[in-house]
Length: 308
Ligand code: UDP
Ligand code: MG
Image 1 (cartoon, rainbow, N blue to C red):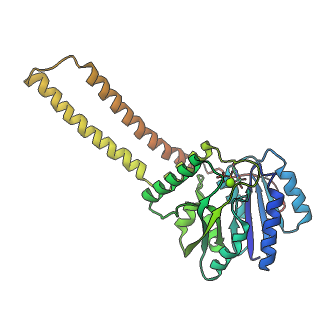
Image 2 (spheres, rainbow, N blue to C red):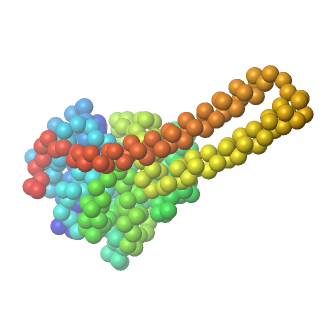
Image 3 (cartoon, helix red, strand yellow):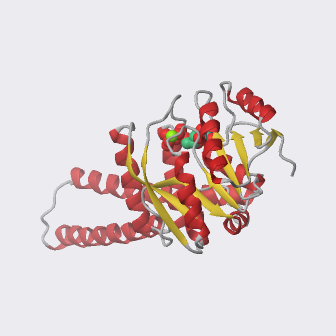
């Protein structure tokens, strides 16, 4: 098997058929052997029915039906676990990632790269707020992490079997595949493209899910927030110490003091705020630690036609 195509599906009934047709057209023209691995991530529309129909008429179509919605990153992980190809393409179902780019990704791989990711030159049809937060997130992430995670790339990419096997050895619960793939290393490169609008349906990435992904990315690859908490702790304590000296001075030496309600309130609120922030940051890390300690399976499969 030359190429496996992993496609996470969450409420994509409007796109599945067109997507399958377009990707299949591209792969047939490439004259390679291939398989589809569709992962139904607990869709609440007719996505699963459509997948079953596709699988019935196209022997190249494999599907995995997860037991519920586990989220995009885990859906992709479930798909990767089931692939058999020497190269694996990860692509969104909404046709925002053009399947026509697959041959150029594959061509780069043939000259010796293990990872070829697709870098967005522009993105259409997405709100200014989404573009802005995405831009900001990738910049911050690049600043504070030790692995260099490429900016402005999603999960659309082609990776080699070696990289897939590497990912399988990383059992972390809070997946951030882009970061993990950067961490794995080997020779990586990119191809640029213009990101299209969603073909049909609507985004499954709510702001809630985006914030989660952002926090997973940051906590999994950076200790900077913890260092920030420590540093601000020292800074604030330093200032508090100076204020304390001043207070003692005015109370006992200059005798120039007033019943200081305002300053008291300010320092209590300020210190309290800083402490809460620090505790919150530590909490984010502890939550992820405990998720990994529990060692639950990442996902459960309800049904599949792919032999394990
Ligand atoms: N997706 C998923 N589970 C989810 C949310 C999304 O499998 O909980 C899939 C979705 O079907 C699509 C891909 O992940 O194939 C990217 O999602 P989406 O297009 O909604 O994200 P956006 O492009 O808006 O960031
Ligand atoms: Mg999309």
